[in-house]
Image 1 (tube, one colour):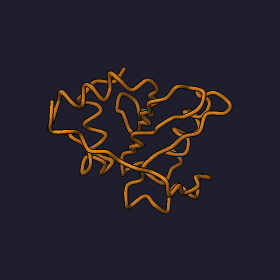
Image 2 (tube, helix red, strand yellow; image 1 turned 90 degrees about the vertical axis):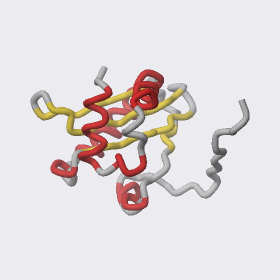
Image 3 (cartoon, one colour; image 1 turned 180 degrees about the vertical axis):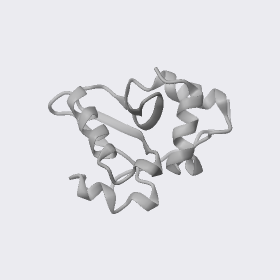
Length: 127
């Protein structure tokens, strides 16, 4: 398991920190603790890539974070992380994700097909 500090560090070095709660340690810890499939890429002792997912391993896998250090992007690490994620899933399990705006052209190159039927529901203010 990776530490919250390692997770925050790779998010910062990948530019994903712009859209992740890196200043909210409790949230980061929860994100790590409750992901049930995480694959990583390392350069010696440094985390340089991560694919963090929530899945049932049979039907659906939500790839929540695909983060690769910008210094190592365009070297096939993101592709390898997705392939390793697929190997861990059941044969019929589909990967779904929400792309960062800057990555919209990246995912079709990996075989992803755009799905227009995604909906989001914000957290409720009532307890």
